[in-house]
Length: 95
View 1: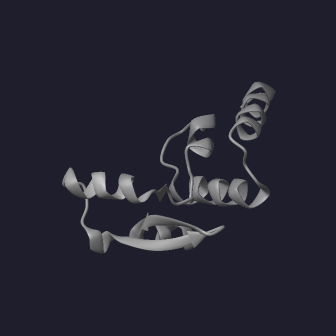
View 2: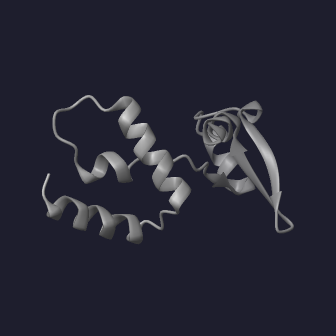
């Protein structure tokens, strides 16, 4: 792995807004699950422990399209606004 790898990795980390903790989580995930002979930037950058927030309409659309059910979501209030998050995504983000 030459310096080019780390240059590209650094560029992608900055563009994707990685914090120190997010980078540490991504690297630990790659170390724990890596199965290939050669590491690439996407192996690190693609890992994300954040949970997607849904508006009420987005959540309703997911349910209407049969992608989930109401019990799959938990309501959160952030800065006075209501959001919904999949319970499984919230749990995975805590790990």
